[in-house]
Every structure is written in structure tokens, then in C-alpha cells.
Figure 1 (cartoon, helix red, strand yellow):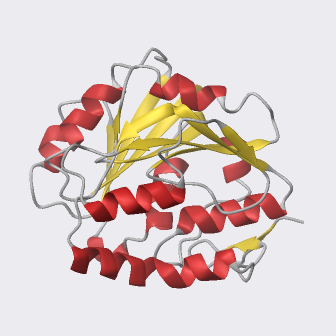
Figure 2 (cartoon, helix red, strand yellow):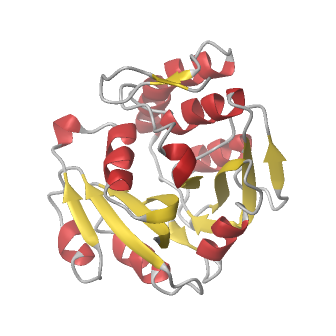
Figure 3 (cartoon, one colour):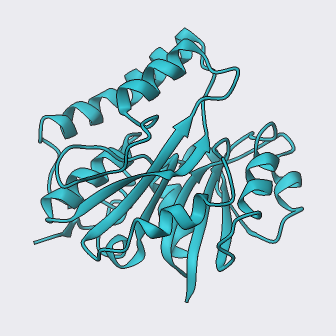
Length: 242
């Protein structure tokens, strides 16, 4: 089994995906594979990705949800630890992957997520969102409650994901929904600052509002404890944790 599988979600990411992949292949941990799940790019994203030794999975844009893209890539992977990385999340240094793996030392840790640093052109909306979510912190943390987690720069233990995949039916915030289920199962999530990436959207105000409107219903349900202790996958029967 490969030590880690890095699943990169992409659509029209020609601006950043080359930088992201360059950084991925400079890691001090070398036992990994890379899978790019592309959801209908019509720019140079795939041309750039094909310059690297990786697997590409293509899905139609109309079929995309964050949970579906991640689960698909993870099903095709072989890693003990499954790393989720947005195509515009560029690892800061060569210790990014080893920082993620170190977070799994205790077997009760189901997921690890890392620090996010704003790019030079980050908008005020980027900075506000990152500050509020705590992903800019330099302090390691381990928690068994709350909804802290991020698939923009996160990792899950394969043995846990097999029982608790990401919800494919919700439009967004699948990472926060997953964290809720994990904590109800009595498992922990670790925040690891060493697992650091440069990540920001440079969103306009209208785009930020659309994203919030898109994700907020799920976030609210999770925050209020209304999201169930099951995980829905592709319309199949929910996976019961207990």
C-alpha cells in the first residue's frame, strides 16, 4: 500500500495547478501518488497536469459535487492516508506532506487539516474567512467536538473513510459535515500548522455571497447538531456509524 494518496480537485485551474503540482513533487516524503479529478476544465488545466506522473479522472461538470469528486478519487487510490487538496492550494514547503502524516500518530485521529496562508493578492473576504475559521493559526490543536476541518488542505485515514465517506448529496461544506459524523463516532481531528499551503480565492463580493449562500444551509445544520450521524453516498443507503 502506498503511504499517501493526494487527491486534487480541479476545474479551470491553469493559473495555479502547475505551481501546486511542482510543490507536491518536492516533498521530503516520497511514498505517494497523485490523482487529479477534473470536472470539465476548458482551459489548459489538463495539459499542465499531464506533464506530471499522475492519474487523471474526468467527470462532467453537471455531475460534480465536492463529496462525489473526492470519493471518486479516493476510491481509485491506494494510500493509507488520503490527502484532499484544492488545485489552487500550493504546499508552502517540502514538509507539507510529512506534516500531514505526523498528525495520524494516534489511531483515534480520523482526520488532519492544515494551515492556510493567504496569497499576496488575497481579498479582504479571503482574509476574513480564513481568520474566522482558524486556519491561519500557528498553534497545533486536537479536538473531539466542533466542526473544524477543511478539504482544501486536509487528510483522512483510509480505514475511517471506507466506513465514513464524504456526503455526495449536499452541495458544499461536505468537510464540515464529515467532521460532525467523525466526532459523533468518538474520533478526533487534528489541526497541524506544519501542513501549510498558500490558499485564497480572491473572490469578488458577489461571488463570496453566492458561495456563502451555497454552503450556509449545510453549515448551519452541522453547527446546530441537526446533521445526522449517517453519511449519504450517491443516493445509497446511509452508512451507520453505531
